[in-house]
Structures are given as C-alpha cells and as structure tokens.
Image (tube, rainbow, N blue to C red):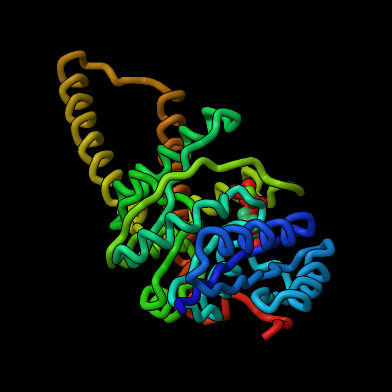
Amino acid sequence: MKKISIVIPAHNEEGNVSLIHQRIKEVFSSELPGYRFEIIFVNDGSRDDTQQKLEELAQRYEEVKFIEFSRNFGHQPAVKAGLDYANGNAVISMDADLQHPPELLPELIHKWEEGYDIVYTVRTYPKQISRFKRKTSDLYYRLLSMISDVNMKDGGGSDFRLMDASVVSVMREMNETDLFLRGLSNWMGFRQTGVRFTAGERASGESSYNLKKMMKFAFTGITAFSVKPLYLAAYLGFIFSLTAILIYGIYVIHSFVAKTEISGWASLIMTVVFFGGIQLIILGIIGIYLGKIFKQVKERPNYIVRSKSF
Ligand code: UDP
Ligand code: MG
C-alpha cells in the first residue's frame, strides 16, 4: 500500500488543526481507500493552544504526528521541516487554514499516479479577493520569471503541492537560507504538471501574513533566483555616462555659439541628489546580496525542533 505524507505548517491554528485532520480523513476513507496516509503538523512557534490540540490529536489518531519548533521560524522553514521528516511515497504540503481544499487531494494523487513527479497547484482567486492582490501577485510572478531561471508565469505561486519521494529527497539536501520553496520546486525540473483550485476563506483565526511580510517574501524570491538586480549598477552607469558625454558636447557647442555660460543652481543640485539616490539604491542592492551570503556562510539551521511525536 502506498503511503502519502501530508505536511501542514501551523502558526496559531488552534481552531483549524482538528478540522483539517477530519476533512483529510474523510477524503481518504471515501475517495482514496487504497492509500495509507500520515499528517505531519509543524507547530511553528504558535502562541495559542495549537500545541495542546496537536498532542491530543497525536494521542488519539496514529496517523497524526507533530513537530514542534523552538520558536517561530516562518512558513517556509516549517514546510521544509515537514519534508525533512516525511517518509511517504509522495508528500503533499498544504496550509492549515483550509484555504487549500482537502477535496483536491485525489486529483493531485491521480496526476502523480499518471507519472508526474511534482503536481503543483494554480490558485484562481475567488471574487472576494481584491483585484489589487490578484494583479500584484500576477505581475510579481511575471517579473520573477522574466529576470530569473524559474518560470512561474502560469501559476505555481502557492505552497499546495505534491512531490514524489525522489523529489523530496533532493529537496532535503538543499540547505539554503531564505527558503522560497515554490521557486525551488519549479527550478528542480522533473515531470511537472499543474492543477487548478479556488482558494477558499480561512476557516478560523487570522492570517499570519501582512503586507510587510509579503513584501519581504517577494524580495526573498527575487534575490534567491536572480542576480539581475546586481547588474543594475552597470546598466545605469552606462546609460548615465553616455548621457553625460552627450550633454557635455551640447554645452561646449552652446557656449561657443552663444558666448555665454549656462547658469542653474537648481538643475545642478537636482542632478547631485538624483545620482546620490541612485548610488544609495545600488549600494542597498549589493547589501541585500551580501547579507544573504553572510547568513549562508554561518550555516545556521533553518529551524530548531523542540519536540516531536515520533
Ligand atoms: N504559517 C506558519 N508560520 C508563520 C506563518 C504562517 O507556519 O510564521 C502557516 C499558517 O499556519 C498556515 C500557512 O502557513 O498554515 C499559511 O499562512 P496564512 O494562512 O497565515 O497565510 P495566507 O493564507 O494569508 O497567505
Ligand atoms: Mg491562509
């Protein structure tokens, strides 16, 4: 009998963990009777009663396991931890809040049985989600695909995904800091296919992501998969030097013909400030990459486990 591992990161999800376990159990008993399954909850430093709920579940049901982090490490490290410990023939990662419908599991598994190694999901947004969020997300993945060697133009921007055990074992070996798993799984290759789903509402509790965290995650993605921002300095340098030579030429000719000097304190200051700004931006970009190298060379783990049920 094949075994499916389901990895569920949970940060303050006391109202959801038992609910999602129930729904997954139903799906497996009604539609996937030929499979064994385990659910690995990763408690990512929750400050509510998630841990207690997980311990109760793990006591009562043998298919439920948990990993407890020593503090909050973030969604991506939590998924990574689940992958590191899962031993199913296929591993599925999904959110705890039921925005990733368990009813999609049979479809993911059928695609896997057809021979695909990675079955990612493409989220179509329900009407309630603002146009702004849909558009910016779409634009972001287009930009990322344009400047890097991952291609996520047609979706894949979610962490609801099935991976074959062979893929998971490769992923386990990847020990980069600042994880961006959706990019990594796209970048890995293998045989991939996508499945569509409509993200529902969060069952209970509230989202752990705010705009600031989203922006940070977006930058993590770009700097993890592209070095193009570093080339910006070179491109801009070229453009501005050429412009400067041109303008200087015009100035020389003008002062010969008109026999006057061009005055202008304002334009001078503007130019100085403008270039000061550009230089700081470029320095900042170099700083971001330097910071990433700094974090990577320390080789600290992505997460620390405080306890686990197996
Ligand atoms: N999550 C986590 N650690 C965090 C933030 C979130 O493990 O620091 C989990 C959370 O419990 C949920 C999933 O990651 O299972 C997605 O988070 P959330 O629903 O808050 O994000 P959204 O769906 O709003 O993007
Ligand atoms: Mg959510």
